[in-house]
Image 1 (spheres, protein in one colour):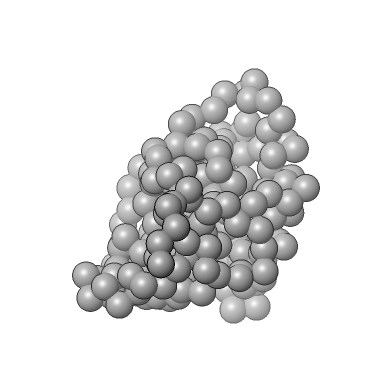
Image 2: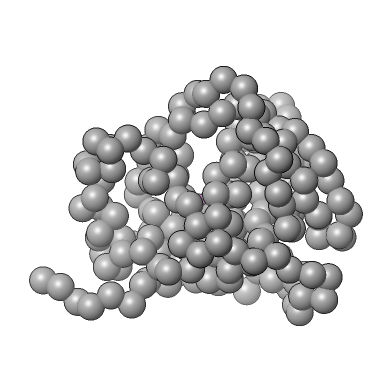
Length: 189
Ligand code: CO
């Protein structure tokens, strides 16, 4: 089942998400629905706040990148209650996009490597390090659980330049080709 994606400006995207426990109802169905939503909207990552759930869960399927990045092969993972221990390495920039912010791609500077601990969908614990593209996708998705969007990480100038586009998204003046959940804003002319 497809779920609507929260749009820029939606309050759930700004909350710090909460941990879940093993009894969380309908977890496997939710994970399935999130993958389906992500594939339909052609994303490589999706975090629970993007389907209006303020819980610490995100998923990634980086396999579309496997030609360019060998380590993306078979990289389809679910991250439950993840915790970033450290970000390390040189900073580098790459254009990022986000299903909650359709039509905007901007260069984001991040550290290369992330050390993360998490549980997978079978509640197996993992303690891993990822660098490069995978490290970047993980950092982007993890930010969602902290209420951070990639546009927060842009320079003041870039932020100013995209302000109008962000407003249009918040007011529903976009057609991304998938269902979105817009914030409840008063109509303005
Ligand atoms: Co995103």
